Image: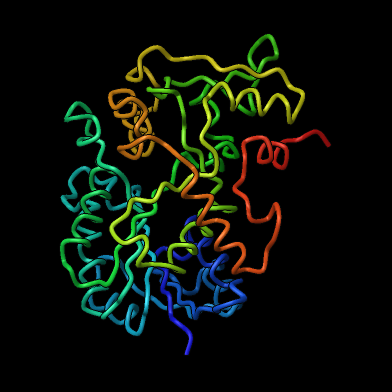
Length: 333
């Protein structure tokens, strides 16, 4: 009998990546279930057509979640810090409240292995100097899941800076126009606050690598119990980003530092306020996005393990690099 893994957030970037990776396991196939609030959506219908058991449930409805989690050997959960409910200034619900409902439902459903896409606490990492709700609440959710002592294992993969963000033209003006809008002299300028510490930024190609990293955790869940796993593809500086893009495209590119992280213009957009806070706590903590030194050896190990379980070999088992990613997405034709 195959093991059932249920994905909360199945149609999102992380959930889709996890499902895609798990679905192609050729050595020990899993049975897959995807939770969505709208099973009739095109993305949910596409999942169903691929063989995923798509079920309807809402993160705020514990009973629907218990039903959706029933029979699951493992679950992967990613809560949305930018859910519309949090945009309402009069709304008192928090992401931790949402996470607690999901954790309790999984525990009551008898889930053995709980994998949550969490974060290090910005407040703890910066020693109280910078608090960022998304990071602090996600950290608290993982701690709560571990505290129940109900699951056999609780693992916390944590996604770094999405490389996919560079594909969003609407975000380009936030970072100096890079990589879509050149400056007056024709140079593409990636403008942002510095990272802090050694300027070693953890980047993740979500579609290419995050699913494999989570897949690798599910292959040996006991090994990763109570671990915060750095979900990274490449650990590089912002100067490296500019250099990799220039090499891939032949377009002159440069990095320009915003001297104070507080000066990053986010136009009142809540999601970007989180990004601004991220720079603040990383600077205050010496670049420790994960609360410790950034590294990619663990992610590389998990990637290789999952890729081999998918029947892949050679370069296919390796993490994405900045150079390969920009070459694929923006390289000269």
